[in-house]
Image 1 (cartoon, helix red, strand yellow):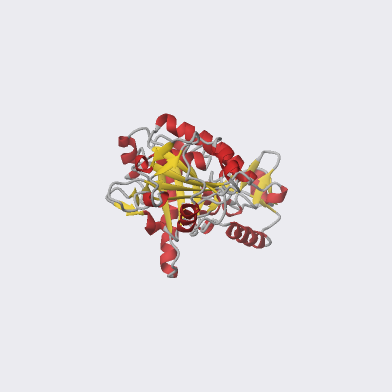
Image 2: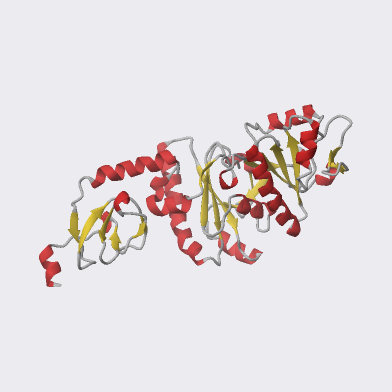
Length: 363
């Protein structure tokens, strides 16, 4: 996974792959160690089997300094509950003094500053295009890039490359999640079917990031959904939850085929536009809104609706039409609505059941 625009708007990236094939990239001829902030040696072999973050950064770039402060907080929180996690700093600092000063602010080890070849190799391997950039390497026992599963088998992370991905943060105990999940399942199948019918090379996948309390809860919940999941208890769950600043569930974060974050408002877009929201991009939302505006030109300026005693006035989002919860279908709405300002009553245009004024007066 990659995220551009980072945590709280910073320009950062994150990627998850397996670490077992890449440990050798941290070493160089005659060097099998890293340096701690105090200058002591840290054996690279001690990192084997851990969730590993490769952190590309530099002290001269203000967004790096801001992101580093946040990353230190996340790191310390994770380390308090999980020792199976480490970060390695790959510096782009201008000189050794700048490197030492910047590294002293970090609690994790670093590639030695003079080792330019190793730093260049890491930048090439992970196609680092900008800093700060954080690559997450997942451990596994067999050396394959398999960190997700669908209940029956491990699924190679490489199989997700080039797909639009939804990270679905939810849990069985979460009542809003229980309500939203069936809708998401329906939309998921409709999007997959549309892509299949169109014969496009595009694809869509969802990954459950569970907040269930135990394995039994997780297994029960996971058995009801058709998509992949991070295994219960995986350290990456805490990382991605913190990284995307998920403060409530259910939440749906959308990553594009290039791995960059498209939106953290996937749940709202599903509620508003259902399967039409795909691929969830800003351009797609703007197109939907433009189509809604064109459609609204044919709507009457006011209507009498069988579900309300007052005349309803057509309003746009700019004049009070959204976002809202439709008083007829209880679904979220935005854009255009029929509204009674006096009663605070709003409905989707499609939900209006038109009656004549005379029948309303009789009521």
